[in-house]
Image (cartoon, rainbow, N blue to C red):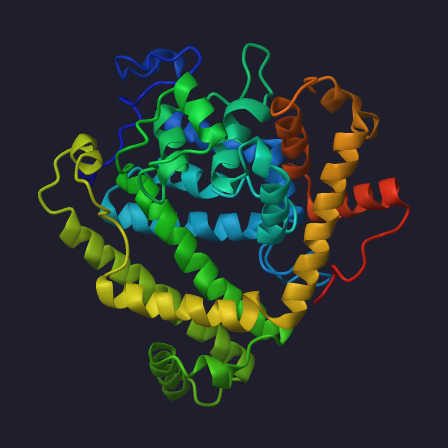
Length: 392
């Protein structure tokens, strides 16, 4: 049953180009065809080049040789799967939730957070760089398959959710502020429950699937993981149920159980928090997060994140690879800044003469690269292939 506070694809905030954002009216249903506007949003994201490039962008491991490690693309699909389960159980709009989950990482540059760190440093004098704002810039300005306008022309509800799925934005960076001026996204309020669910689905996916990849790569050890009492309880339950199963199957069962535990916790807590909510407007005016973990699970998840940063994300081999990745991005930015002729013609044509706009276009170009394309570009410019970036 549809919840009263679910986003409505037939009465949304319109589109920047050709939509009636002022009245909130959606286009004429007779001209829509079989899809709702939120389904159209999802399909536009899936068919975008930026989405396809996620297949070669870092999730945890930089340009892994193995085919079994997650990339930004497989991670986004896993987030969407969790998001749809939660949305269906809560009576939300599944299509908006799925679209938000699929789009949430479109702004990530090559090499994950290492690449973002390098771009942030390079852009420090020109307004900075943030992958969340870059995701919005990607779908509103850079990914432009239509002859009539820039961007994918997604619904206000989708753009609002991307802009503030982690909560209200008090101090937007230049990219977000510029887009908000063109198409106001009400940055000071909480977003829809669908956007809040997309955010917690991201947490559930990477918390658990990064454990899976870390164990597979040998960077994590089960005995160390079991120092976390809530994981140890799950592991003992798995061993009791499947005492004779191979260890690798027990580990995968542990991951499934942990995801199920988190999903059920989110469902129970969100139902409690949304009691009495009668509309999307009430959600936005609530002044607090309504969808997410219970306080107890939030503490478990905080401890798990701290463990993962200590043992996996800041593992010496990961840190070493990240330093080399940052160097690749920094060298690319320096090269393109000094010689625009190194960029493809279609990007050279976009380059303004002066900063900060000039540096922002260069950052857009680099942010859109896959890991492998960035390494190839660095090799082409500097005559040597970056070493040590294939680490598993």
